[in-house]
Image 1 (cartoon, protein in one colour):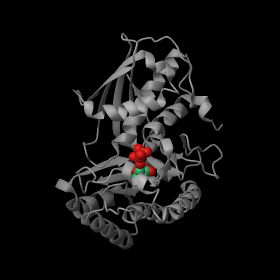
Image 2: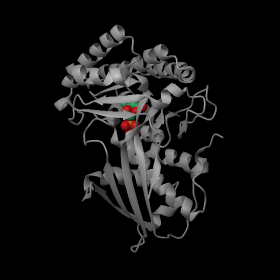
Image 3: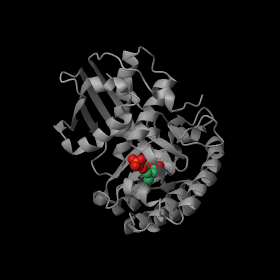
Image 4: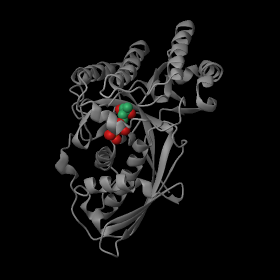
Amino acid sequence: MKMNENFFISKAIDPLPYESKWEAPSNIALIKYWGKKKLQIPKNPSLSFTLDKSVTRTSIRFEPSKSGKFNFKFFFNDSLKPDFDDKLHVFFDRIKKYVCWIINYELTIKSINTFPHSSGIASSASAMAALSLAIMDLESYLFNFEKNDFFFTKASFLARIGSGSASRSIKGPVTIWGDNRKISNSSDLYAIEFGKDLNSIFKSYQDIILLVDKESKNVSSTKGHDLMHSNPYAEKRFLQARRNCDSLIPIMKSGDLDAFIKIVELEALSLHAMMMTSNPYYILMKPNTLSIIEKLWDFRKGKNIPACFTMDAGANVHILYPSEYEKQMIPFIDQELSSFCKNKEYIVDQVGAGARKLD
Ligand code: DP6
């Protein structure tokens, strides 16, 4: 069933102490979200692989507020991190309408990431997803309901309000966020699972993340989305993304890897084309990004292995391939691609099942 915003507004209730810990994965988009209306309402649907090993683990201790005011403290890797307070304040202000019981609490939030800091993996997706799940955990305890579809859908809805791509980090192995005419229950408000029709080849896909650059980006994703408002190619890009999404849906069912590769690589390069045609223009790819792409294309042609690349808003390259090719791919990556990475570093990840509660 498709839910509208009113489904997600909860009642107020007296606070009870509670503690909850969740692990949520990062994700890599195959159809890219780039351009939005307010509060992360996307201009086009996006579709992603949920990752397995690149996760955020977040615990929240909820205490009834002694001062009668909402408050929180945020720790990252066991140190108090006030740098994140502004972003978190904005998030809590935005979600209060939907979880109004939260205003009676003081929160102690503790987070860690399993992937290296500034590795280019979008930590806001896994971080906002884990945070939203811990909040929903308390809501389900206070209002005594199961961790059912509504629970995860509302978690995705709250995560989206924190960061658009975070809506896709609740479930796995493949999720879709954004209205799509081919999938009747798809929504701009939250992500849904691709569903049972997903071809089994995609359930064990590998994602090797080549760390070309570990510096923080000189243009943030927030700014990048914003520049789409004045990009002269924006409307065409949203149309292209909608069409690519329509084309990818049957491919995710049939497992046609040649067709999969064409769409996934086109999406990655189209995303970066939008950056280069924004005003002011900018380039996040590095020379080594292009060297990796060329090497991969040569390898694919020579060996006939269906490996392809994608990128998010950065210089790093994700190499995607079915797990059965691991024996050929890992030596190729080690010997021919890792030299283009900072300190030869890369992350071996794969498609995962989604977030889970920790004890
Ligand atoms: C290139 O979700 O990070 O990774 O909604 O402003 O937080 P905000 O942006 P964000 O944008 C992600 C952009 C992307 C593509 C994608 O993940 O779909």
